[in-house]
Length: 376
Image (cartoon, rainbow, N blue to C red; front, side):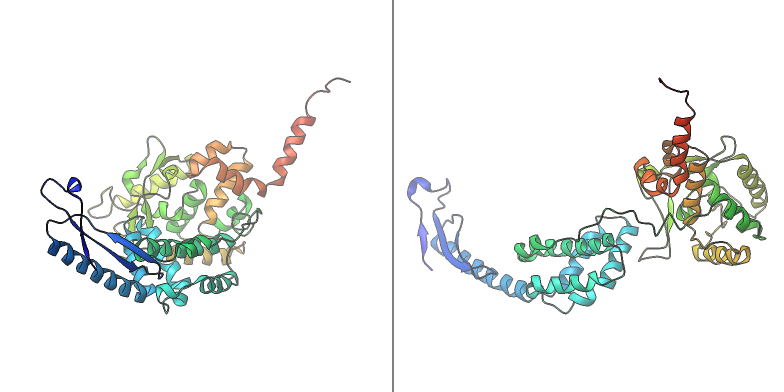
């Protein structure tokens, strides 16, 4: 291709006046024009043109042949720097189970809309919630947006990926089933003959802490004078590079102080006096587990053991949190106080729990009926 020279009035101060103009095809076969910056000599401009065309050819070859799995690995490194380790763990597992098995065999640019729709059909058939399905679609879309920005993946395909419509219905598969009434808890706890797990199950029921929040507690988090527990960290074993991690709580609302009732406080004081006798005891030790934390799987094992002994409805460890909220609501506690105590929002408390108690609605009518006759 020829090299051109600008008119003198367009030269730079140091005499740069030569440039190249050439045509090339982009990844989609579209013909485009490139006009370079100015160079001092004709030879410099020509060499720059040769280098540009060489890079275009190399880039096209790399882009057109790159595998989806390679783009995914690049994106994963980027994603790791953007999210918490617990979130990253979930992202990796999500991809390993539902995205990579289908897409890892493809070259990036061979993935068209029909390929994605076939994958969506598989996702649609899974026995998971619509919200979970949309999370999988959102994750794939994130990967392809990265591919769009770095490997010129077709923007039209990315823009056409649609989510499933979420029906506005109440999910009755979690909180509504996974909780105990006070009577059920009383029956359960009376069957627990292990002092350590008697304390743990009482603690979970009467505080509403998440399991990870409880496991992460150390003795310097409890203030016996103020009758409070400080929540500023959580435990997770959903990490890729180690067995567990103590990390920041789930949300900013989760950082809080939780008041202890007198009966639970008495149990904690008695337990504290016993733990202080341990050799080299210090307040940085875990409350539930000493030097090492109590295992979540061990808690589950003992929970299910005593559920069977007590012959009560089966719940998960997280069910203690639901049970605590149901207890507070039945006692007539204000939703703002409940939300602050469990480290959640008022909206989430009301959305998740209040429909579980139809008798509370009847109390509203009773209160209205208790008023004196108004007018004739």
